[in-house]
Image (cartoon, rainbow, N blue to C red; front, side):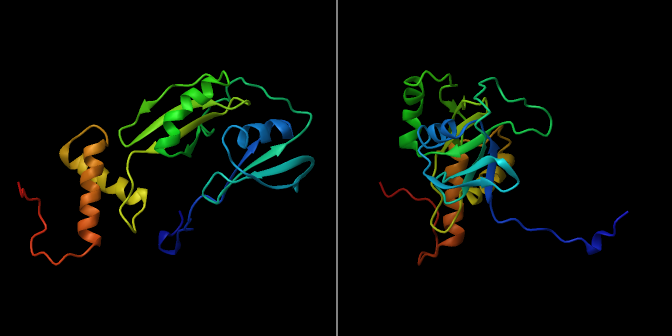
Amino acid sequence: MTDTTELRKIQTQGVHHITIIGADRQTSIDFWEGVLGMPFIFDQPNLDNPDEGHLYFDPGDGRLITIFTNETRKPDPDPVPEATGSLHHLALNVSQATFWQVAARLDARGVTHSGPVDRGFMDSIYFRDPLGLRLELASYRFEPPEGCRHADVMIEAHRIRVARGDHHIDREHLADAIELLVRHRQGTLSDDRGARNPY
């Protein structure tokens, strides 16, 4: 058995990139840029396989979605297997303004989708890409306070939900978590910053 006193974490700092095995080059460009609006920013051979291309797209946060392409592979819309250890779906962030346009824009392309799904703390819609990969377009229902991240709000909302014995995180937990984070992170001149009724 390994002596855990010598073990140290390998600390991650975010997703660097996600690479997907694609079909032909044009299908990748048409979907990732032509449907999802991700700028096509980099193009080179797959350095591990000279028969493939390697396309890079910016999903909107400066990270990367990359696709291995091969002109001999054609799109297969059959669902990608969802076995143990496999990717279930890839979730991408969209604004609320965009989210409520997604269903109509997929309908215009004849793409089958779930329609809006209420996740309590976010709205989601699911569909498959031309290669059968399940995608989720997700939109948070809240903005974190200045200096906080969505994850900061989520962990506080989780603690509130558990303390109240509620089934899942919903809007009230988020609102109370945001209030709590502001109280802890932002100063005030007031001796009592509790809720009041000035009416």
